[in-house]
Amino acid sequence: MLRPDVDIAILGGGCAGLSLAVRLASSGQSLCVLEPREVYTDDRAWSFWRTAPDPFEDCVRASWTHWDVTGPSGLVARGSSGLRYETVAAGPFYDRAQSMLADSPSADLVVATSAGKVRKTAHGHQVDTDRGTLSARHVVDTRSPRRVPTYGQFFLGREIRTERPVFDAHRVHLMQFRNGYSEGVDFVYTLPFAQDRALVEVTSFAPASPGGSVFSAWLDAEIADLDPGDVEILRQESGALPMEVGFAEPDDDSVIRMGLRGGAARPSTGYAFARIQAQADHVADALASGAKPRPMLDSQATRFMDRVFLQVLQTMPDRGPALFESLFRNAPPDRLERFLSGSTHPLDRLSVMTSLPPMPFLRAALTRA
Ligand SMILES: Cc1cc2nc3c(=O)[nH]c(=O)nc-3n(C[C@H](O)[C@H](O)[C@H](O)COP(=O)(O)OP(=O)(O)OC[C@H]3O[C@@H](n4cnc5c(N)ncnc54)[C@H](O)[C@@H]3O)c2cc1C
Picture (cartoon, rainbow, N blue to C red):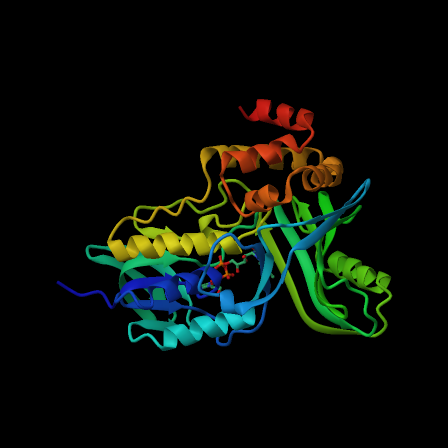
């Protein structure tokens, strides 16, 4: 019988692919990560409420206990007693993953290589790449999704250094609502690293992106409004994250999907980093024990709640800012943070449901039921 080249082929060496690879690097199974990039850069920052440990805790750049939301009736300033909102910078994350894989005799990260078609064979799979064919017992596909979401979180952000101290470094501004940039809900997100340094991001939850030039002019105006003096742009990031229940490409019998392609973005928020870590734990454990991985992140009840929430946002975008304000004002912060991080605990869910005005959600729930 022909032996496969490797036990596990991971297609895509981004957040999900590398998160899985580092967990498998010392499992004794041979693995190969295929990644088209030649060089990794500090291309994004992942922020999330930490609810569990992961192998990248050394890469946390900053953390906060205080956050606020500015809604139609004013500021909602809250603080966590249990969880912290943390930011993992992509540059150190990629460095750490690369060095852990370099230390493993059974793991290979092959850059400058794209994966193409995957075929099932009698003994596993064959993966076409632009450097030839690779055979593997298991294939995990984390490549960027092929389709554009029908509703999503679209954003453009710049990390800037300002001449004047214009940021409060102790408080994350999660949402400051604005009007009229997209067909959905528009807001500014500010992640302050120091009084003179922050990531400022203009964001739309909308059926389509307002477009690069609208975003760019909007972000210029937001930064100018800070009265910052001279501004140095340190880095820029943009994204289009799915906010759709069931966005994942369907599992077939053989290929395991992870990351955004595997439905890792929480449909109601677009948050994905912590969920990718949970997926990676699950898939690594299953592959190590010979079980079939079933990286399901959401219960039926959570999927239903997300569907209802998204239906309200999509059909009544003008009510979005007030709904988010109610949610952030009324829900106990720790329960809300856990819910936004993916908790399916009934009390977390109940706290979120009771913090929102019931009528629009009941109507949407009835049309969904
Ligand atoms: C700018 C930005 C900021 C974000 N911020 C947050 C945040 O603050 N909090 C949060 O929870 N989530 C955030 N997200 C969402 C999510 O966490 C990230 O998108 C995350 O990187 C998704 O991981 P992934 O592995 O699915 O995709 P990626 O990290 O994008 O990895 C996909 C990989 O597939 C590779 N690939 C593509 N084509 C091929 C091919 N043919 N063959 C092989 N490989 C291929 C790509 O090069 C890439 O490396 C952010 C997303 C972006 C874009």
